[in-house]
Amino acid sequence: MEETKLFLITYFAALIGVIPPGLVNMTVAKTCVVHGKRNGLYVAIGASSVVILQALIAVLLAKYIFDNLFVQSILLRAGLVIFMLLGIYFLLMAKRRSGIEHSSHKANANSIFKGMLISVLNLFPIPYFVAIAGALNVGVGVTYDWSLIIAFVLAASLGSFTTLYVYVLSFMKIEKYADSFARYSNYFMATLMLILVIITIIRIYNL
Image (cartoon, rainbow, N blue to C red):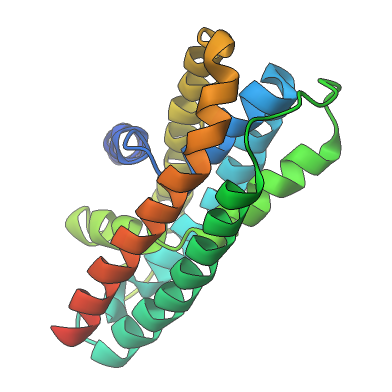
């Protein structure tokens, strides 16, 4: 019963957490309009599989993260570097492209690896799931309850995948706007990275 309650709360928390436009869901959307729905779905699967590891790391860190400023500092600084590099990358891509050419819509394993890579670069789910784990008392006791941890990890992954799948379905309905979307999405992503850099710097300064 406790596992079911934990699963449902974590599932909806993960589902809601992925709704705002971000690195992963915008990558899924771009893949849909450029390479087709199936490749977008594969990116979503790859990204969601990495969430399993991110949620597990969050649980293992839960008992230390709130009381250890050093760990917070390391995570924030690592995120700062990644966001800066990604911001430069998307800005260069935006200046280089002026529209898109639709590639083959044949799905392949590369889309799964692409989703996994993008999800690995996205560090924000870890502190998000740390907060959820702490609120639900998952991994913060003296010993680990692995039945609760497994429920937590699976719910986090499935909740994330649900929202990404909705992105796949939604963006395929506006495929006629694919060129405009592809043209401006890189600028959007570069701006998003800038915002994340600013937020991260403020958090580092306030430690």
